[in-house]
Image (cartoon, rainbow, N blue to C red):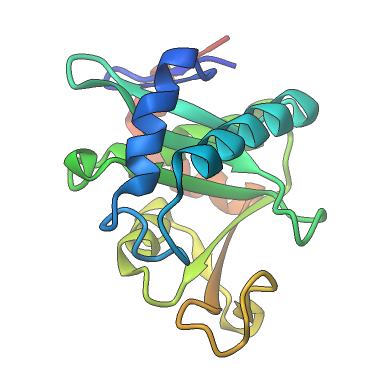
Length: 192
């Protein structure tokens, strides 16, 4: 799937994205809300896993390209979390030189639009470690709603791990009909 706004593109991964993805996953600032940075081998395995899941699911975490800025800014998209196949989550990870410009929010809004209007999803969630306030702010800017009763300890981490506790946000298709009006660029979205 290829999605384009006036400022950015979400697209399938290319082989040339892999070195930039390794650098992204090796950056301590980018990975501070994850258990650790990734080795080149771990990063490559993750890239392969993302691409395999995208092919199987028909949607996934797409490469984010920002013309005139960078060919690979990171990824944004939809995914089924490994620990709960009943959910579809929206997620993102961007190089720090792309932080603070609204790229994550814009790309995530396009992914929500495609999820609801093209793929017919009823709800899409997002979750992150309670310490990850930058990602939580993106969820809030999208209009997602925090559901504190669904906050949880991440099953892949020990309960006493500093990142174990996660916050849970949700967007329903009904909510999105109202929230999408705040993103006028969605009216000119190119999806193919």
